[in-house]
Amino acid sequence: MIEKDHTDESALRVNEGIDQPEALNPEMAGKFRKAIPAELDAAAYVAGIRQGNRSLLSKAITLVESSLPRHQALAQEIIGACVPYSGKSVRVGITGVPGVGKSTFIEALGKYLTSQGNKIAVLAIDPSSQRTKGSILGDKTRMEDLANDPNAYIRPSSSAGTLGGVTRSTRESIILCEAAGFNIIFVETVGVGQSETAVHSMVDFFLLLMLAGAGDELQGIKRGIMEMADAIVINKADGDNIPKAELAAREYKNALHLFPASSSGWSPMVLTASSANGSGIAETWQMVENYTAMTRVSGYYEATRKEQALQAFTDTVEESIRQRFYHDPNIINRLPSLKSDILSGIISPYAAAKKLIGG
Image (cartoon, rainbow, N blue to C red; front, side, top):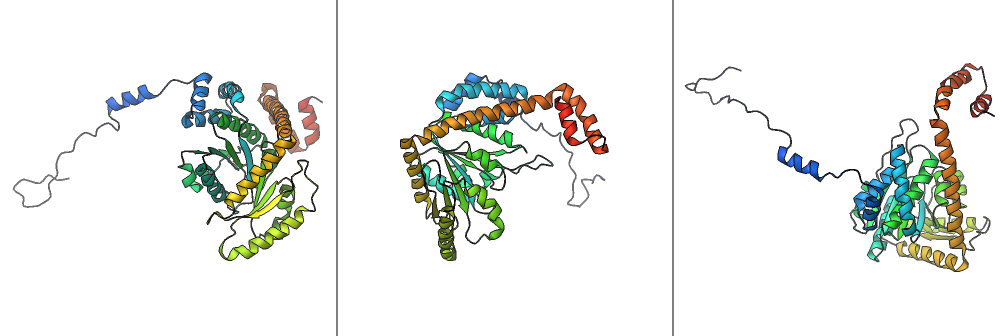
């Protein structure tokens, strides 16, 4: 650019620039570096979790979800120390097809429960892409009011493409949340896959959210999940939708009579609710309390918890065997050749599997 002479009457003047400062004040950078603690041991994590430190709780859950061996070793040490402080919450599984309003329903129910002096944790399982393994993890965005409630904790987690991963990490996250003092745990699933069966095996009460007039195209999904449900709530029962919701409730009540009786002795109930105006929210929780009270007296509640502990043991063994198998160097070396032979038609998939296993 041409420099202008001071005698030039032009209003344009080019001044010399200055050197750009550092992006971060060196003195402040030093303070930040000092504030970052070294990697914590299990005892520090447990102490923080017991004191209600949400940052350490979140970090511990991240360790649980990690596949790195050193993270898994630390996570298991933390879990082991937290187990004596767990088991005292009411665990509720909530599912329903996409669009049924699970997040808004959980937020409305959660706000009601925290107003009653409860501490709640929401573990939301987001389905991950089989192709990219990515997941949106948007539950905190969808439950903004509840996320800002000091008596609530929301943790969205990716399913990581494996049912075993969901089962293990969610069970262990429940233990951590209970050790942190949360007395009600919600486990939310997307409602279109096998994760419902897994979640059913780790909660005390299984709640199915439905919509009025959803259509017969959902019958295949509803049948399997309805048989597991301890209650069905017809959501979005407000405004002009109230008559449809009441009609749907009657139809579902009739349908439930066709299913085998529950081993708990509890007859599944059907309610209507609206997250928008709060109707049916208090009644839903009263139903959960009635169920837990009845099953505690009968002994079913405790028996189910013991069955779940054994199921957790079995699932952990199976997942560990699977992980060790596919991380075995010999298996890793042989897999490409066998896959190539399968694609070339040299060997059948079944014969290749037997050959790999050694059967």
